[in-house]
Structure formats: C-alpha cells, structure tokens
Image (cartoon, rainbow, N blue to C red; front, top):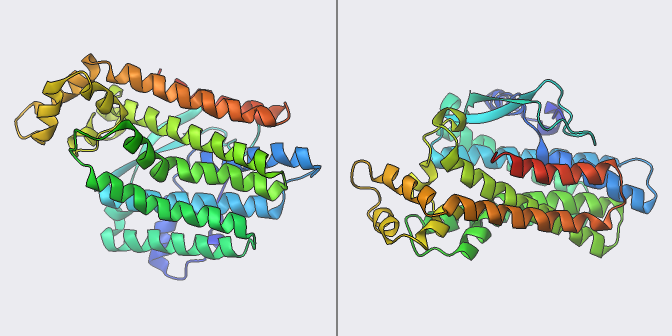
Length: 330
C-alpha cells in the first residue's frame, strides 16, 4: 500500500519533508495488510462483495499511527538508523503475499536528519492527524478501540522505563509491556476491519485475539533476533536492548537459571566485557530456546482464532503471516 500525502495534509514544508522520509521508506506494511485481509475475509461472511471506503481509511490510519510511534521510538532510543524492507513486488495488501521477497536496508531516522524537535513534532502531528481521520469514520466502537492504542503506547514506554535493569521483572510484566507497545495496535487493526464488515461480536473478538497473539509472537521473535542476529543485520550491536537495561523474554528465562546473570545486570554492566558475558549467559542458559517456545505458543493461539473465518485465500494468508514471523528466527 502506498500512503498518499493528501491524507497527511501537512502544511509545514519541514513536516512534509519528514513525512516523505518516513513514507518513502517502503516496508511490508504488515498492519494495513492485516486490515485488508481480515476485512475481505469477514466481508465474505456478511455478504459484502467489496471492502468499503472505511476499511481502506482504517488501514491508512493504522499505518499513520504506527509510523508516528516509530518516530517517537527512535527519539527515545536515540537510534540513528532504522531498518526498512523493500520488495520487488509490494503485495502486502493482496491475499497472495510474497513474504520472502524482501531486501533489508537502512535509512537515517527522522530525528537524525531533522533533529529531535522536528521528529517529536512530526510524530505528534501524525498522531493528531490520525485522530482527526479516525473521528471522521463515525464509528464509536472503532474510535474507542484505536484511541486506546495511542494511550497504550505511552503506558508501554512508561512500563519499560520504570523496569530498566530490574532483574526481578516477571514474564507477565514483559508480556503486558509488549502488548502495549506492539500487540495493541495489531489487535485493533484486525478487530477494526471486522467491525466495519458488520460481523457479530464474537467474530470481531476472535480477530482481536488473532491480532494480539500475532503481535506478541512478533515482539518475542524481535527480542530473540536481538541476540541471534549480527550487528550488520540489526543495524545496532547485538544485545543492545539488554545493554540499555530492557530485559526481554530471553533474558527473563535465563535469569531463572543464572544468579551470575542477575549480578551482572544489577551492576548495569559497569565492567568491561560484562555485557558480552551476559549475552553469552542468555545463550547458554536456554533463554533463546524458551523464548522461541513462547513465540510459538502465541502463534498457535493466533491461528486457532482464525477458525471462525471461511476457508480461502485470505484466511490462508493470515495463517502464513503467523508462520512467516516464526521463520524469521531461522
């Protein structure tokens, strides 16, 4: 999907230039793809021959919100580069997704190019614009659903900031933070599409659960890759989240087996080589394997919630997206 600048409607040329940097980055457009796939599958259930303008506008709003969150994330993380994906055929909005034909590359972040002030304003602007277009959809259930996502982003960042280097952090706390920061938007994307198709509440709720569990699985896989991929693949040093005190699933599982890892984390890596030692302990203590199992459990839950959809290309592609996420580890 290509987002047209007319929906952004920026009057400030600097913000327009920043928007160009964001939207020209390419990518899989996973969230709007999910909106379209769920919309088409559920529209079939209610007799709609085509998805509606509201379905399409929802997909655009979702991508605007996601983009705004990325801009703010890069500011908070002080990231100079962001990984983007380009495919020879951008089929993310089609039922026949070509999930393997994507090339990774890197682009400078908005705050690196324009400074922190412009980046924060650009993110705020996109949040505000998305809220305006959301209100124009005139569906109070969807408005509440998506508005909660924006609140969840802030809650997730606060939870993460308040638990840095906390070796007592629980898996449930990690999953809740991951829900706020990642899964909430994906769940809202899939449920919103179902609502606009006019399906009953139980089907819409299953689409929410599909999106939530896919989002959690996606975040867990990302956190695994932070340990298993090279710095070149990540665009940052391996284990960088751990180095910043952000304890993810692999670390939480490894902490159950290693008191030494706890000591190193609580010292905030004050000694040379301590971060590298901590990464090695995570690998040795089964943190990666157990996190992989957790990602698969969430993936299985996501697929189970698709059983209410009619068999066909859209349902198959929704299943493939779940499986593709797990394949990223391999």
